[in-house]
Image 1: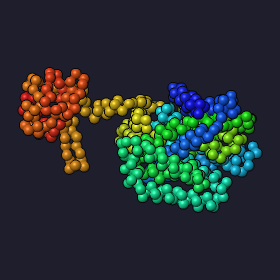
Image 2: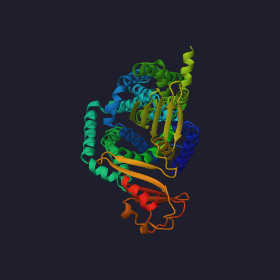
Image 3: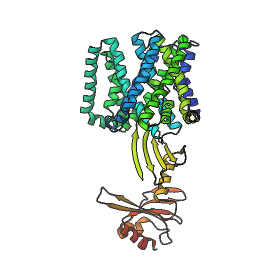
Image 4: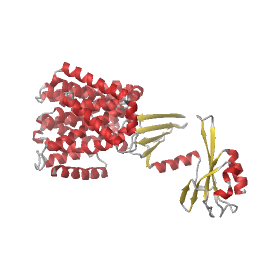
Length: 364
Length: 161
């Protein structure tokens, strides 16, 4: 209990400090977790409480991502990015897979690493776009839709990775039935749900909290991946009064996800970092520049737009950590932690100085 | 002139205007309530950007639409196109000698003119929906709402201008 109290206060001050220097706080939580946990001073360890709270954070993060996946919105805009989205997936997933496989990881581990290697951090990327005031540029929109595309791919990645361990057919059926039930129940009761969430008392907050927790943990108890359950519940509710639901779920997400990152850092044994993992980080940066240039050519017919897109999407973050924490072995988690920390820091810098990078390239 | 609006997931709503000179202006309503205003002139590579609070943004909006309430006598007309072109005029006045010291009830404003006083500004303090016994003081600024005819009648019969 004491370590929980200490963890929250440390994270709160970290968040305040990182906002001050306008940097994403996510790497800071993990670094402090590393310093205070197993690979550092060993003052903190994982226990039932930290696991549960971290799990709640993860569930709410994914629920929140699901809420953004509004079908109507996607239909109107997101198709523009389909080609670019697949390019991003192929280039970075294959690069990640090959490098993991060559480092001696088995097929499943390589798949997990490739997924983490592929998926950029929506939180850091979007925060950077706002912070660096790039929203007027057409590339910013491409980047934002690319993040949405990656969120959708995440659903499939979660599905395939869990399927691999549980027998693909039975899991597919069970999950399909579960997701179908969630969508139809939300649809049938949409009026009632809308009524509850538009109330002005504490019941709306309580309702959202318990619904998300119940659906996710119920899914887990019948061996449907809870991450998938949370994200599909979010997606099923995205047609309702989304602003209100976001308003109610954000406090839970914001508080618990911080503990998730911190205790992920605590649990990782970073001793496995080597020259090879530095090579993986370099590849991860180069990969995003390659896919960025390709997307820039397709969507904006410009090489320099591509550099902008690449520089803005280097940062990996929350989703890679989610994948590592659900599916990663010791070695896999250590590699992904290192990948996320390095690319999050380097990615924030490349996003900030993308215009300078472009100027330098133009000189040659 | 091009105008387009788009909802950006995780960011907020973006409105884009391209002027006849091909300068670009974008307004982005962020999730955290802040508003970013971008101006990118066609000769420049980098935009000029300001971060605005909602009240600052409203003020700029008012200036641009010409509805400046800071000058003492201004009016705006609101047209509800969905309600059979219902038009309502909102007008501000400085009180005249004729009504200083009197209250809303004895002036019998609503019966005589049809207009309604919806707010009074006194030394930087605002009174919304003043009660019938509200007494006007020198230098009060009042906000009157009504149809064009009612506002005219209010000017003539109550203020005596």
